[in-house]
Image (cartoon, rainbow, N blue to C red; front, side, top):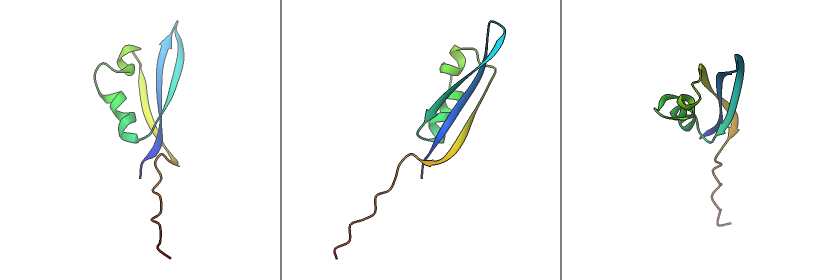
Length: 68
């Protein structure tokens, strides 16, 4: 089951540390933004980044209908 993941990116703006936080539907999507080339992480010259997995499911499995 996929859980929502929060991407946190730390970068500097005018010598002051800033944070950007973005929600993703899965941990895999979150890490792909950090690890792939030419993503937001690279474009803002970030200094640190990590993904935090929440305990909230992003996709729910619907129960099967019973014939009775």
